Structure formats: structure tokens, C-alpha cells
Image (cartoon, rainbow, N blue to C red; front, side):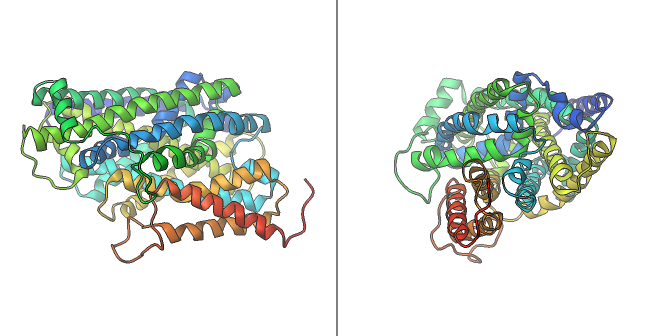
Length: 487
């Protein structure tokens, strides 16, 4: 189990992250410093921060669990991600930079109305609250294995620490710790591959056995909307999903606005995409190698039966002292980077989009931002108990929650960019209509089996495409019943 050296490694990590938050707390003079780092953050740092925002303990634990149970076909998602980079860099980032906004949803008020902006900010906050619940839930499983504490104690511990250093340091602390945490996170994945291969015999032998077991398969050109493991769903349809995240998510927009220009914002976006490909390859390989280690080569017995518990078991029971502490720190690192980004984005959205307006970037907004980091953190702890329901992989749960709200949000922004004369009431009603249509195609993972049966079940990459298309179509139909507004 955990040795003294393991606890020392984890303690040093947490102390370093808290120290960085305390250091940057002295440099935040106003709301702009806290949320945007003064608007002059280096693009390479922002690029690493963007990928650290995207990955989390859901990636560290979920990707290996997915390839352990299936194969590497979800690597095809990277094709859609690369296409989305071009679309976001061409249509979204220049508009955000030119508009002088502090929040992505401020643009919706400029094009439509204040209620449309409030609706978008509310949907986004619901989306991030569920994401935060997943971010707290996943590493809590590891803390439970290490310490023997119940889930509620592990979840509260994770949430409290993330709230502490995010509320102190803001975007500068989040970006700086993101860089450190990404290096720890990525190195942890490489260590898992090394020790799996060492146990089996060599990297080449482990890879050959994984190939023979079908775990390295990553291309599939069949057409099946009910599955995400084919090129059409994962590479073509997924483009809409990725554009919705990179183009409409305040976590990303906040970082685009923290760089110096459109060009540097695009550099950071490209950097994050390339690093994301590397992360996917490494962590899907971890899952394939774990399958060989336990199920093919039978190096160790595996008493756990749930796929989400395989990697935590390997870390706690197989890795040598010191290394397992480093791997647990890597899981925490993955999660802290994502949690800090979620909390700063929620805080910014609340202060800028949902609360009554306070002029300027002064102390009042800064105090409100820090207060809302704490309040949203408490709500995120409660959401983690909802995310613990159901018995599917962590990755599947996380992607479901992400895809639920992203389509209507993307529909709102596309209408704001290209159809700003649509009536705001039509846009609002159509947004709810798009979400209602989506429910006809969803199987909800946190509900007991058989409680809800979709009319026709599709895989999660289709969710944003369905709800976005339904929202835009309904808005144009409803607009016929309203008098057009002047541009």
C-alpha cells in the first residue's frame, strides 16, 4: 500500500500548488488580472493550459479504462479536433478578439438581447457544474483506495483544495500550475507504460500481445450512428462537438482573450491540439498494456471487476514506493488543472453574465469573483454525488455530460454570427426546443436501466449536431411569427 515516501511526494505536490496560488494572489490588482492575466499571457503557456483544461483525471483513468475494455478507436476523435481548430481559428477567435468582450456570452447580448445572454450563461453553468462533479468524482475513487476514507470525505477534500488555490491565484496561478501539472500528468502516463512493459518483458513484446488481442485497433470505417467507434461518428460528426467546446466554452475563450493577439490565440489553440494527440496516444496505450499485463500475460492477478478500478489497482498494488506516490500526484495534477479552469470560468461567467453589472475591473468584481469560486466549488462537491450514479466508464459519463449542453450553445453562437436579425424570443424558445428534441435520442447514464428509453439511440458525438440543428431550424421557423428587428 502507500509508503511514507509516497505520502511525502503527494504532500510536496499539494504544498507546491498551494504556494503558487498564494504567490499569484499578491499580483492580482483587479478583475482583469484575476481573470485574464492582464491580457499578455505567452501563447505557449496558454496552449499548455488549454490542453490541461481539456484533460483531467477522467482522461488519466477514463482513457485507459476505455481501451482496456475496448480498443483505441476513440483516437479517431483527433481528426475532428484538427478540423475544429481551423474553424474556430477562422470564425470564432477573430470575432471574440475584435468585440472587446470579457465573456463569450456577452457577444450574444450584443447580437440579440440580455435574456439570450443569460440563457446561454445559465446553460453553460449547468454544463460546467456537471463537469466539475465528474472532475471531483474520478480522483476521489483513487483517494478512497489509498486512504480507506468514504467517498464523501475524498470528494470534499478534492473540492476544498481546488477552491483554495483557484480563489487565491486566478488565471495566472491556473496557467502556471497547468504547465507543471501537465508535465506530471503526461510523465505519469509514460511511467505506467514503462512498468507494464517491464512486467511483461519489453515494450515490443507488450505491443505485439496488445495487437494480437485487438487492443491497438484505431480505425473503423463502418457506418453506425449508435456507436462512437467509427470514422463517421468520431471524426466527421465529432467536428461539431469539438467546435462547440473550443468555440463556445468560456474556459477556452477566457484563454484566447488572455493572449496578446488573434495570431497568438491561434498558436495556443494549435499547440493544445497537438499535445492532445500525444495525450490520447499515451493513455490509450496505457489501457492496452494493462490488458496485456493482467489478462494476457497474467503477470499479476486482478481481483477488481470494474474497468474504472483497473488503473488505480495497478498504481496502488503493483508500482514501487515513491513511484505510486508520483502517479497519484499525477492524477491529482490532471484534475487540479481542469478544476481550476472550471472554477475560474464559472466565476467569470457569474460575475460578468449573471450578476447585476458593476462598472470597471476594480476590487468589487475581484472580491465577487473569489467569492463565487468558493460557492461554485461547494455546488461541484454536491454534483460529484450525482456523477457517482450508474456503472459505465468514467470517460463515457464525462463525454455525455459535455455533449448535453454544447449543441444548443453552438447553435446560439452560429445564429449570432450569421443570423443576428432573428428575433430573440424565437432564439430562446428554439434553444429549449433543441434540447427537448435531443432527449428523444439519449440514453441517460446516471438513470437506472429501463427508466428511460430513447426513440432511436445515437452515440454521444451526435448529441451536439442533433440539438444544434434542431435549435437553428426551430429558430428560423419561429422567427416567421415575430416582426424582424433592425440589425
